Structure formats: C-alpha cells, structure tokens
Amino acid sequence: MALQIGLTLLGLFLVLLFLGVPISIGLAVPTIIAMTSIYAFDVSVFSGAQSIFTNISSFTLNAIPFFVLSGVMMTHGGISRRLVNFAKLLIGRLPGSLAHTNIVANMLFGAISGSAVAAATSIGGVMKPLQDEEGYDPGFSTAVNAISAPTGLLIPPSNTLILYALVSGGTSIATLFVAGYIPGILWGLSCMVVAYIIAKKRGYPVSDKVSFHDGLTIVIQAIPSLSLIIVVVGGIILGLFTPTEGSAIAVLYSFILMLFYKTFSLKDVPQMLIETARTTGVVMFLIGASSMMVHILTIAGIPTAIANGILSLTDNSNIIMFILIIFLLFIGTFMDIAPAVLIFTPIFLPVVQSFGMHVVHFGIFLTYAMCIGGITPPVGNILFAASAISNVPIEKAIKDMLPFFAAIIVVLFLVTYIPALSLTLPRLLGLI
Image (cartoon, rainbow, N blue to C red):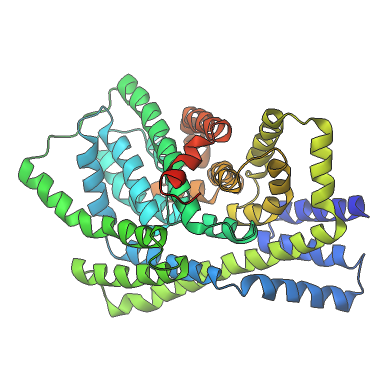
C-alpha cells in the first residue's frame, strides 16, 4: 500500500509539474487521488479539507502575512538605495566594489524584508545602472545579485524558518532565528570571495573614496532601517514578544519608517495590500496542500518506510547526510522552498534524530540546501526575478553563477558537518 501511494503521489506530481501546473495544485490533486485508494471520495475530500484548515489555523502562521506586509512596505519605502549606500561604505575600496556592495546590500535587505525575491528585485534594480555605467558584465552582475539574494531566508526574520518551526513540532523560532546568522553570513562571505577573485581577474574598478561627512550622512540615513532587525529579532530573542507579535511590530515600524523617509503615499496602500494578500495566499495554499500530502504520507507509513530504507543502507551519519545533500539539491531544482520544508521535514527529521542531530541544526541545514534550489532552474524563482530585473537571459547568468555555486555548496558541507556553525550562537544566548 505504501509503495502504491508513494508512486501515485510522485508520478502524478511530476506529470503535473512538467505540464506547468502550479506546485500547490500539483500537490493537492495527487493527494486527493491517493486518498481515494484508502477512503471513499467524499471522505477523501472532507479529510483533505480538514487537514488544510487544521494546519493553516495556527497562531504562529499569523506572523507570515505581517512579515510579508512589512517586506512589501520596505520595498515601497525606498530603503534599497540607502542600504546600497551603506553597504558600499562598509565594503571600502575592494576590487569590484559594486559586486560586493550588491552582496552585502542583499544580505541587509533580505534580513529586513525577509524576502529573497524582494531583495533580488529591489537591490538589483538599484545596482544594475551603476554596474552598467562602470562596465560590469551583465551576466556577472545578474549572477552576483541572484546568488546572494537567498541569504535573507537564513538571516532573520525568515518565514521559511517559521514554517520549519511549525512542522518540526514547535521548535523555538527565536532559536532558529539566531542559528541562521552564521550560515547566512558565511553564504554571503563565500560569494564575496568569488566576486573578489573574478573582479581582480577582470579588472573591475574600485569605488571612489567617501568623505567623512558623506559617510556619516549615509550611516545616519541607514540606521533607522537597520534598527528594524534589532527591534524585531532582539525582542523575540529576549522574550519581550512572540514572533507573531514581533511581525505586527515590524509592520508598525515599517509604517513609521515610511513616514520618516517621507515615502508613504495613500495611493500605494491598495497595491501594497494586494501584493501582501497575493503572496500570503500562495504561501498559505502551499502550506495547506503540503499538509494534505504529509497527512496521506503519514497514514501510509511512507516516512517510516523511507527512514528505515535509508538506515538499512548505512548507519554512518556522514554518509546519510551526504545522501540528503544530494537529494535536497536535486529536489530543489523543481520544488519551491516552502512545500519542500513542509513535506521533507517530517520525513527526514526522524532519520537525522536517530543519530543525534539537533532539530535546530537540521532546520538550518534543510533551509540552506533548499535556498540553493531557489536559484537553480527550472523553478528558481529568485533567479527568474534577478534575470528579469536585469534583462539578462537565464542561461547567461547561470554560466557566471557556476563558481558561486561551488562556493556556497562548500559552505553547505561546512554547515552540515560542523554543527557549531548553527548551534554556537543559540548556546551562547542560552536558547539551547
């Protein structure tokens, strides 16, 4: 029975995906069909609907629309230029300064907005004309923008980590947030190393020196935006408010910031709300469809069968983690981050816990691996966004991204096999 259901789910999902059906539909339809092999059709539909309602009726998930709205407000609030200037100031006079600026700005904007796509479009939109003016190859510029955008999914606040906290059985969101800092920063630093080598080889220019007065102005302009991270994440870590309350505070802070920067306009409010509703609807439907699939997988005993199958091959934890890395990098090429986290967490978490891997460490590992999928075709929505904003064909960007892929995959192996990279900060703060 487990084999029949597993093949039905996988086969139909791949067919629908190949036909271009949205992933949420591609998850829901095979699940309902697989359910009919266990229940009557009416019971299958009722059970599926109940599973969707139960799993999205979570107080924790209320944080997602608020963080999405905060990110949308940040995008409309015109902070990208200020963060680019601040990042440029931080970088100093490195060869290929604008490439490094792009990477650091994506890390900062992604951390503030919680959206890799928003980072790729907002920061990429600011950086493109500057890089074109200084003679940067468009493929290289697009590659730098795309490859560094996912850092915002690791550096908090992160909606992906919130989803993982929910599906992993209530893992502390504050602990996951803190655990994401070092891996996220290492991702960015590895990209900067590659960018430095390429910039040095191609002779890309160094940015002009900034005067003390201009530098001070840039810092003052950026501090209000950067303070959002301190207020929201700091408050969650210190236990001053819950992640959901923190997300609402992020919206209020973003609104105040728009007033401070004088970028708030009533005519933008409907568009911001529509963007928020559209993004939240997609995420919630993905959560609901994924929860249906997890429900039928659990009933059929597929997670247990997969766990037993992997453990029967080897009991060497290093080999098991290597297998998971290869699998997740492959699955990430055609599955979005959210459904992948929701589906594979209950399947693989028992496997890694069997040899003592910490649930927080696994969450960071899983998120990191799936973030790479966001910049790989055919379902690399972050790559598509970066390519669209720079008007560069994806195949050209991919060619320039190859050395960056090598660097971030090296960091993935470090994050996988060195738990301290994920767990040291939470332990220092007494969260573990």
